[in-house]
Length: 308
Image (cartoon, rainbow, N blue to C red; front, side, top):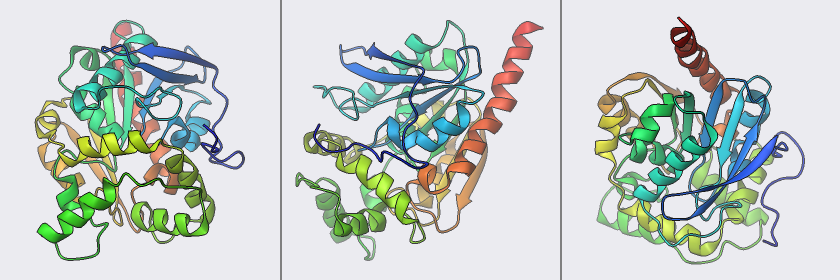
């Protein structure tokens, strides 16, 4: 790809992984996977969102990899994962399950953090045997399970058929995003980030989003348009924390609150005042701290229990 897929310096420049591997999903699709940190450390698995890549988690990887084994993968068609034929919630679940199986030992537990479409991958996989074998706790960040287009606040008008129609056209556009220009940064900031987001945060997100192939962006927009993972929410039995920005236009807090109400084992919601959809970039320390907390409580407890 000719465009730079991420910023090359600063806190959002992706760290060099300890190792990389290609994981094969159920339908033969290949997934680029990175492993950071000590091999014998507690495991964390990171699933990024629509139009993003492993680079989106740069701040979390840099923080957590000091004393965690951090596994991050590119969703099919994103980042360095090749474009695939199938685009569906089942494919999201297949891919996550394949990554867990390939990177974790049998029975090994990990905290799984999913942002946006990555959170939807978690919900899609919630009932799968492979997911239940390995996921000990979950962080759902800036995500939802259904009615994404209806509830989106990208179009600043009253809810109804007209807003839904316009939102569908915007999110499902086939138009190329083009280079990262000042205008492009302003548009991306409006749609995906809080008004107080610093320029270097906007730049980092813009580089990643604009690098996503147009056909991939469109194909996944169709999946998100018809998303219905409400059953997956009810099947997500492990302890689950929820994080959302109060200024999130793509998956506004109504989605997070619905998740909290339906999750069988929700351990709390964190609403971040003034932050948008890109919480791991906008509030990197807080998101990392939430993941660390889940590891400390659930992974280490599980290891102690296994050794008893």
